[in-house]
Length: 136
Image (cartoon, rainbow, N blue to C red; front, side):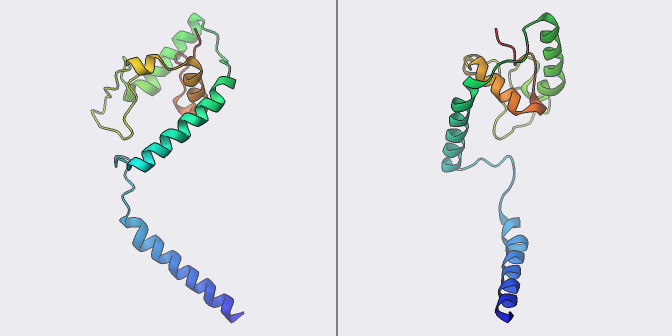
């Protein structure tokens, strides 16, 4: 019983050292650029997950004028602040973000499959935009 108590006290001391000495010294800033390994791993995991799941998704929105107008309003209210009204990535904050804000009007973004964009919208409901999520 005494050995168990000593082990628990030891674990508590290690946890406190970790919490108060080590964790505050790590740069947790969202503007910190991750290392090459972290970047490659994140890119791989994201692209594989989208590749495996995006094709199974269907668009719940019909491309009606009403849906397109609602999507434009949602974009202007929820997305344009960071992506810019024209999708250029020129945000109203005039701030740099990491990862960078996607430029929705560049050639790479224009070539994204509609299913990948829809999949992103469905998995990120706080950023969802009915206009972006339309299939043509």
